[in-house]
Length: 237
Image 1 (cartoon, rainbow, N blue to C red):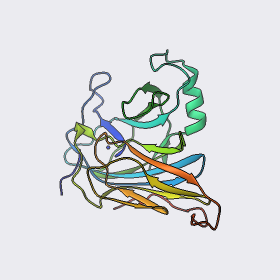
Image 2 (tube, one colour; image 1 turned 90 degrees about the vertical axis):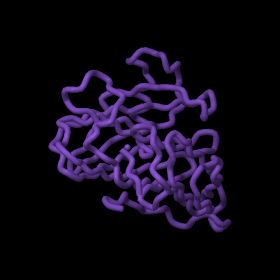
Image 3 (cartoon, rainbow, N blue to C red; image 1 turned 60 degrees about the vertical axis):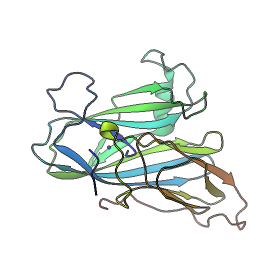
Image 4 (tube, rainbow, N blue to C red; image 1 turned 180 degrees about the horizontal axis):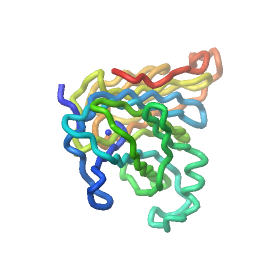
């Protein structure tokens, strides 16, 4: 199995502390080795929790820059100033965070961009995290946020370093589960095989291949799921 050098479906860009500003590169000594993304979907919001594993081949960098994409319905143009009130609204609504061990990190800044696979009213919010901790030879991170439901759909954008998709493998999966009162139906097309059920949708992610799943409200007892799904992201594949 080929390893991808993040999101995952996250997009993780690793850079050593001495790198230039805003580098678009991957620290060559770090490889992504597995990813498990679990998304619990209700009528109005999806709770995203992605655990991602990495291995360090040489010397761990002293600083990590992590970029996490979240679909967002912007109130203003993506070209708005950094003090765009969307940033405050986004943080309040989505609450993105990263956990490494017992350390919890919040974004340093949020930027917005358009994506051709989304409708014109939607953008991708890029959450920029700077992490300065001692990185061991192998480690995992957990990325969590709330994804609002837009146009009766929940969206998830997988992005990988070097723009390379991993080969289809159970080590890289994105799974969506409905809570009480909703059914799920996959709307997007995918290069790899998928499992598409009303009670679970599982996808092997490809780089920049938008995942769109329709959220259909149903009466309890009409084929919807029973109790809300209780899950936690695994720390290993």
